[in-house]
Amino acid sequence: MESSEKKSRSGWFIRIWVSVIASVVVALVLAALILIQGSVSGIEFSPTHLEQRSFHFYEIPVIEQQITPIRREKVTNNCLQFLRTGGYFKRPSKSTPRWDLVSLSRGLSGTTYADAELLLTPLSIQQEDASYWNTWTKKNPSKARYLWPIIQKLAINELYLFIPPILEIAQTGDPDEEFEDAILVQLESEYLRLIDSFERQNKPEVVEEIKNRASLLFPSIDFQ
Image (cartoon, rainbow, N blue to C red):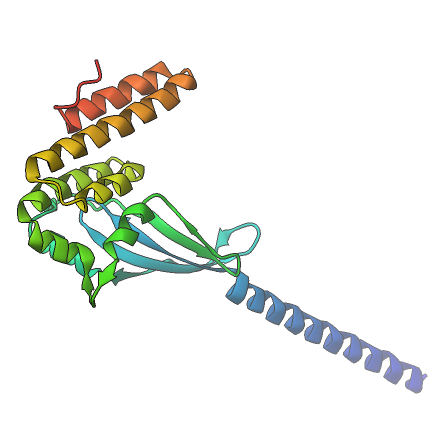
């Protein structure tokens, strides 16, 4: 009888230890999975305040449930800082910054890029250990005063897709008047392409909204 009780107790302790070890193993596996596959990081850009920042947090993989607070850090961008302090971009003093996604990385799945990357990548170009666009701006002050406010307007209105062709025009070396005309022609072309896309989708209300907003941003472009 005594021996039977001892065996029963022994079996009970073994089951407890097996359960504890199994729980620890599962916890370690889950922790490793979260640390590797649940790590989320990325870059954000504020077109209103001309700032860039990184963010990072952890989530439960698959269901994408956030489990830690978001940690954000300011990212130094020499070109943005130069354009901001030089007054090429307008920075409201009291409004809350709006942040647009530039890139996002989840675990081992790689990095995906959002539209704001179409501006941030060109602004990061270096030439002879200096910012390409800082140098361009210093060499072309009158063009810069015309170009950068337009770029900011496009960014604020989430028209990042319009920006690469505009930056290409800036590198052509055209005289100032031809430069400004070329940018307006390009803007009109981009807007017409966008309008055509929504007309094909039979969305007249969106087309009208695009025309109205375009007229407010760039009064010299006539879509009537």
